[in-house]
Image (cartoon, rainbow, N blue to C red; front, side):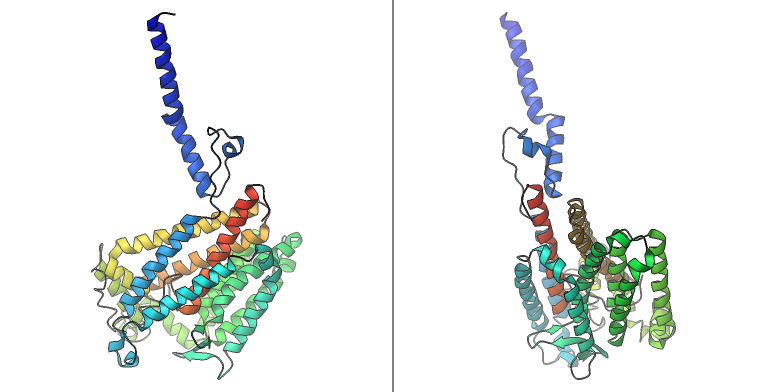
Length: 434
């Protein structure tokens, strides 16, 4: 072979090697590998060693999800402090320090993180066995909280049990309990899911009991979230579609009846429809009007961290139900959009983990996780809708962010269960046992 031919052959070999490592096909393969790793899947190439003999790198859990939750809680610490720092100037909170709510919020996050680490050690099989008992315990606590001199009342609502270091809201436990119970129920009733009455009536009775107890508190917002979780799991579990929509229509009719027969709920709906009416702007529509003013002041980039005016005793519950309005005023549309994108990604990722569990024939784990996704995503949308005036005021917090000990605690417990399911999914896909 001539020197020119050898040179051409060497050049072709070099280009082929370069294309194999850096060409479009190689980048596509790297992209598929990255996506598979993010989604918790195990690419075939990891098992065959087609990647040059490199060992497969599979994280034990979804680290991105965990770090996103950490970031949301870190932002919540900043925003809760910003929203509550001026409260001691009010006579109602005059005995509190400026850092009172910040300290309690950080304490609640600490308790939640420790509890979540403990929950992370519990196998999903244990939750499946204990689901009916956890649901029964939540019913007992919901009944106890409405007993006079036992449940703690705030602003006319009796929703909390005092635990000394913090107050616990049983309705937060009920949200997780209904996700577990509905998932367990669908697994047990899988053979009759096409027979509507046999498949649905026990869940309907359970929802009726939960709803009755919550309306005694009253806490209609929590009841709506719990009902949506239960119906969502029934639908995802394969209950007949026509019958599902019939159930939804019946539940919607029940809510309409409750509003029609309750003067104060009816007045809240009228205030929601026209909050600027003088008859409501200083009453039922007061929170909504000042929330809208806060978003209006925020514009695109916000007034700056700590520069909210509405939190200065104009907007009630700025550190709890209306934290998003403070975010909108101080961080603007950009800040609100970033928070919403974070919750969208989190909810989507939770659903992906649930779908993976179902694909691995872990029906309870998959439906339970998807129920948690409905809870986190649905409550976020309701809270945002209330803050923006798209929905009537419901008294629901922003998950993982608003001030509230039991809400933060149960949110973190739910996230820990999702991470556990994801870890067991990955273990199964590696050929091990959950």
